[in-house]
Every structure is written in C-alpha cells, then in structure tokens.
Image 1 (cartoon, one colour):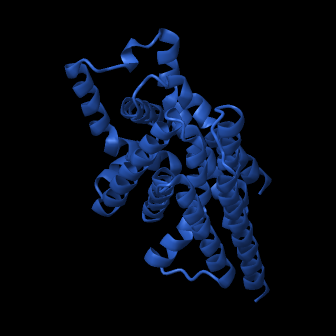
Image 2 (spheres, rainbow, N blue to C red):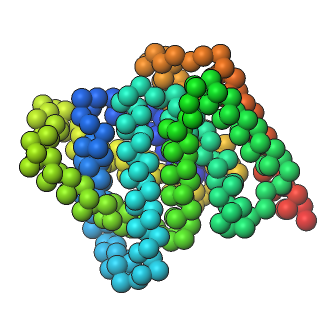
Amino acid sequence: MNNGLVNAIIAYIMWGILPLYWKLFNDVPAGEILSHRVVWSFVFMAVLVAVQRRWGDIRRIAASRSQLLPLTASGLLIAVNWLIFIWAVNNGHVVETSLGYYLNPLLNVLLAVVFLHEKPNRGQWLAIAIASAAVLIIAINYGRFPWIAISLAVSFGLYGLAKKKTMQDASVGLLSETAVVLPIALGYWIYLAVTGESTAWSLSPSMFAGLLFSGAVTALPLLFFARAAARMSLSALGFVQYIGPTIMLLLSIFVFKETVSPVLLLGFALIWTALVVYAASSVRSTKLAKAN
C-alpha cells in the first residue's frame, strides 16, 4: 500500500506540472507537438519493451483482433486528449484543463453505469448532480459551453473504458497504443516537410532535445500510475487523483496569471464538494461491503 501510494503521488505530481513543460514549446503548433509526442513516446516504449523482453506479447496482440480493436480505440482517444491538452495549455486555458480532470472521475461513474452496468449509490448520484450543477454555472459564467474541460474529461474517460476492455500490462499497452497513431504522426511530419510548415526542426538544439524528452514525459507518469493501481484500492487511488488538477489550478493562477472569477471559484468549490461526497460515499460503501 505504501509503495503504491508513493507511485500514485509521483504520477499525479508529474501530470500536474506538465503545463510547465508544454509551455516551453509555445511557438510550436499543438498538432506538431502532438506528432513529436507520439513518435518519441513510441521510441521510448519500444526501448523499454525491448529491455523487458516483452516483444512476444506485442506479437500476440498484433495477431488478436479482439485486442487490436480496443487498443486502436484507446490509442486514438489518448491522442485526441493529448492534442486538446497541449492546445489548451499553450492558448491560456489551464484553468479549464484543471476543471476537465476534476470532472473525469465523476464522468467515469456515468460511463460505468451506461457501458458496464454498474449501479452507483445515492451518495454517488448526489455527487454527479452537484458536479453537473457546477458545470452549468461555469458554462453560464463563461458565456459558452466549457468544451475544453468536457472534451478532456470525455476523451480520458472513454480511454479508461477502452483500457478496461484490454487489461494489458502498462508497457505493452502503451507501446501498442502509440503504434496505432504512429503512422498518422509520421504522415503529418511528411506533410509539414512538403509544405515547409515544420517548426520543431528549426528549434535550438537545447529546445529540440527537450522535445525529444516528450516520450519519457508522456510514458513515465503512466507507468507510475499502473504500478500504483496494482497496489491500491480504487477508492484510495481516487483521493490521490486530485493532486494533478489541483497543481494545474494553482499553476494557472499563480504562474500563468489566468483570470479566475468569483463565479468560476464557486464552480470549483461545487466540484470539490462533489468529489468529497463521492469519495465519502465510496468509502462507506466499501466498509459496508466488507462488513457483510
């Protein structure tokens, strides 16, 4: 449990400070950053899988249509999530990215009800209702639908649902997912080269080296998270999960100087209330189940 907690804390701290890393490449278009993230993540994971001698698992996946379909879906969904996140950070929407990841666990409950036929208890339904009210308040205050937050929550929630269909080892699964979108990323590289619109290749050597590091930046928190999930209960992991978006929110206010209105703070307060209600209800349900 202690080892799992340490791994979870490391993973969510890494995810929380990622906006600082992506801000370094503010002059590179989000799509081009994404293509590099995919390619270098694939290279990083290929080396790691080779070291682990897991290529046999990759061959078995490639030969299994039942495994390939959900992995293709999860690869496309996480690529969409990465693209929206990078674009939002580099266009001054870190507050909304934080909101998206606060909403994600609550959206997971709805996805579990619809697709996995799970039955939330009253407290969990109350949490969902409070969170929905918060999104409505934020949308009215924005004057528009908070599409960044909702898109991030939906894409990552569906990604988790697709992962439930595969249950692959973290290293093998991540390499398979990046392999799915690798041809798209390489095709985009070719397009940028042909049209002369490539930006990343003209970066200074130190900045380009930093972009190469995006593979490790992407893969490492996912690997720490997988180790944590194997050692902790889901309810305990849920408490730790909010480290990431909390760090993002603090960065948006104190580092990136984004404006946070009183109504937006009210919306976040409702989200935090929903999270407390959801976590307390989940812990209570777990204790009752053990008692019975």
